[in-house]
Length: 192
Image (tube, rainbow, N blue to C red; front, top):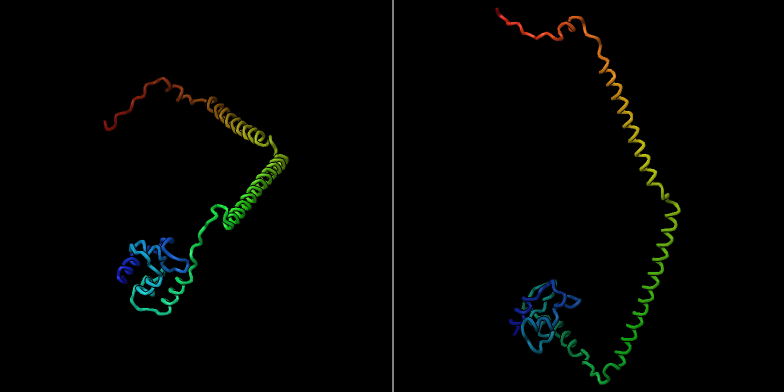
């Protein structure tokens, strides 16, 4: 049986929280499920692999008598399941239900208060931000940009007109240039 328990312990997944107790020991149910055991006790697991834990996957046979005794005591001290003869009217169920209902009511009140305060914050923020901000600021900025663009365009047109006037008023040609204006240009043949 020890070997089968060790095999089951070898199948345990250290990343699966459902297979381990809070202190890192393997859960008896998980080992029983992996090894298909019935009536498995913690003492059996400790007897098979006393050092085995989530942090220490050592399944050696070194027996720790104190650990086995503690496990046996834990099994003996475990409270037996109480039989519920009152159904839904059991005092523990009623007490738990009252606690749950109380927290649900508190949560509803908190949600209502959260909504009220959120609405108040939105109202104050909108009112104060609209008072400080200028609703026409965007329009004025657009108009300023258009004026600057028009001024730049007017400057370019003025420069073009100035250059055009200079080009249209060409300096007079020399008499030789004037005489040669209609003449056919012939290149002299070199080397003759």
